[in-house]
Amino acid sequence: MNIVVTGAAGFLGSHLTKELLMKGNHVIGVDNLSTGKISNLDTCFESKNFSFIDYDVSDQRVIEVLENYKVKIHGIYHLASPASPKFYQSAPFETISINTDGTRNMLELAKRKAAKLVYASTSEAYGDPEQHPQSETYNGNVNTWGPRACYDEAKRLGEVYCYEYYSRFGVEVKVARIFNTYSAGLRNDDGRVISNFITQALMGADITVYGDGSQTRSFCYVDDNVRGLQLLMECAEATGQIINIGNPIEYQIIEVANLVLELTGSSSSITYHPLPEDDPKVRRPVIDKAINLLGWEPKVDLKDGLMHTIEAYRRNLIFQ
Ligand code: NAD
Ligand code: UDP
Image (cartoon, rainbow, N blue to C red; front, side):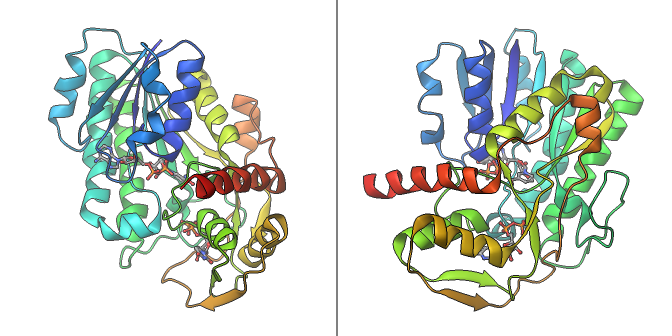
């Protein structure tokens, strides 16, 4: 299969690209390297089945660039977008563009090439949820007037574009609402909770818990996520549907901090800092739809996933 992966140099995109190449696919990775790193793709460049285009997916000309590859495109994974609050809040307009114009560009390409498309949406589409846990039928509680809106609302509009291309043009679209995903490969300076806590614990720095740490998240290991995205792409029955991809086991952030301290053997102290504005208080996916339609559920629990992640971070820090 010939597959386009936007955001290929990012955390999820690089894991997915490696997996797709390993299975014998041809992958065209597109990334403007705004938050991703070309070094994430080092092993991919060793494959003759991999091409890379350094391009802004929000720019309409990307359609022509990709059309110029005179090959059939079977599938498009549209993953390009900053994902960490730290990065999307420092580039709000770019974040809005990549999830709206960028999504439309990839849908247009899918329409012209009769390709299937998986859009990486987010659990942030539920905002600060008033229904718990969150199933795909919950319409969310998102604030348009705050620092997270550029990401949350842009993802929601990205979903709207998917709906329109599906219902008007019959494009085979599937939307993944991805819940917090982690593993090695997250940048040390990514700013998301797992990379922060592990980096801090290994460096002997204070563990920065925001708020009192009672807010919850549900953490999915990257291998489970990437398997879910591929099953979604392959599942004809999931066409025109939104599906949660996440681990339904929920943790308080303070529990994660203590688990990281235990697993690293670090003597770092926990310090408390103001809770960022609009930080969701709870988050846990209902994954019945993924189980029933895709036969997918996560296999890696947080402790095992963290142990792998900590080992990889430790090796990288020693190397650096
Ligand atoms: P990431 O920041 O590591 O990767 C995103 C990639 O997109 C980067 O390589 C970046 O350079 C690229 N990119 C950004 N804007 C671009 C543009 N205009 N043109 C081309 N490339 C561009 O983030 P990630 O964690 O790998 O997330 C990937 C996708 O999954 C994002 O769409 C994100 O919203 C979604 N998602 C991720 C999570 C998670 O926990 N990792 C959760 C929910 C949703
Ligand atoms: N968080 C924290 N300390 C950090 C980074 C994040 O306590 O150093 C908290 C953050 O306030 C949020 C949770 O961890 O409640 C998850 O944050 P992250 O940025 O990883 O993802 P998101 O908020 O988008 O789910």
